[in-house]
Image (cartoon, rainbow, N blue to C red; front, side, top):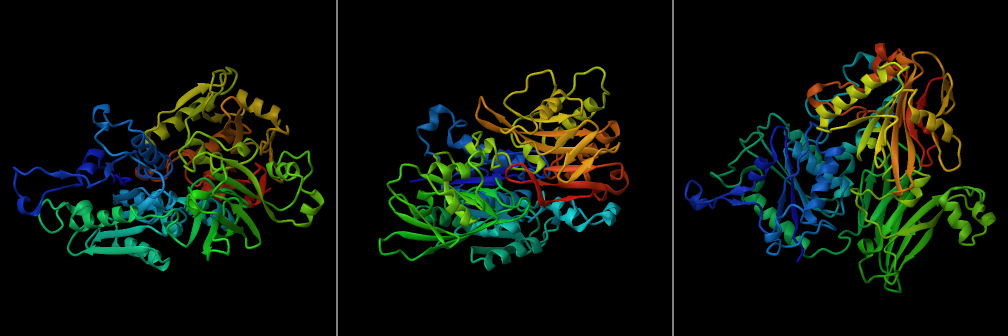
Length: 614
């Protein structure tokens, strides 16, 4: 028997031990007896209470912290060796986790379950808000800031797209096949019942098994639902019955427990697999990515036949056992016209399929073209079909987001571990690098120190600040200042075949897309790739610089928090792959941005995903 894991997400200002205590109760007959001990936890389940400081602590780094805690529990790294033999094993794989929480933790339950759908057995969200921007006056961008009277609508869309992956309502499709329960106190004055009702309405529209519970006379939190010590918000009689129902359902799970589903992702790498199907690349960055899947009746060979319609998808991976089952042959039709056979006898369990619109020359470094030519395909025939799917790789790696392992194609292209926006540089260990040159202004050092302090305040992240003469292997980097040695290294690599830097740094400015920015006071930040050949890992580097000191000051304004109690860490809020500003940002805020947007899958400039003035 596999044992489900109950993962409880903490709320604002509540430490993890108090959250774990939320699952205690006493039998009704002895509820008020001091001589009767509490029963802690949920029967047949582990109760895991991860933590991460910050008002957005189940987004970005907090999201990864929760998944890492689950991984540690699975490996029994937190359980004393002397008692491990008496405990059930932990499996945080397919359909083993119930995500539950209250308030901010309720949002965490929504957010994490929708982003790791193959792991989730069920969701319990108590007083959970949908998105931070709808929660009171927290981070309500594009509302009261006078600078937004100067902002272009297309630029506004790009900036908002940087954070919409945290909006749970946009991802409700991913919960198909789970048991979902939402509850709230009728008199809740912290999270209005409307928030929960709105989410429930969306879930029911999608045909997801959902129940809603609004408790009369109760507010945001309660220890006692009907009688003293009965379990309260998270573990009263109603909740215990629900957990048992989810456990029973887990024991009867098939590989993919639905006959049709939609996988939704707002960014490559933000969502794990659904029924073994995972998105690896998109065609247009910054736009929604969707896969609609439907199981058609078995054919004459008694195979399962799945129809997958893909929208804004360039590369996808399919894990056969999760989609079809261990002993089943399976036929997958991609975009209605191409059929791919997934056999139960195939040694490789996970295959990658790529969409190619055009075929380049044999000298191209594109992995898909190389696959076509190496398989003996006729290039002329391939050119006649400008849009076609090909098998472009196979592997045995995990479908999890918590990994230090990169896909091979990420040496040249973008994938789940190296896609933007800018905050992705903080999703792995990172350091800030400033210059050691004594002839250069101290502004770069001050900027690096300020950035490190913001990260500590916002997310309790301790960041090393290093000089460009130091060693900085095995991590992502934030490179500060135009005179940094790493900027010189970047310029030397520009244009080489094996490295594709997206920005050309000139002697008196820089070129990005169709624009050259060479005026004084202009600042830029941008993500660029770096392949760690020794570790075979793709790393990210964020360059922050200006044409002069004023330019560095102007781009550094994007580090400043807007609402200190609810702040996000530097460059992690509304900052896409690149941003260019000048002195107008002092007067107009976001309305003073000259250019902003995303890089394509191959690190080239994306016209569809960018805004610019030049």
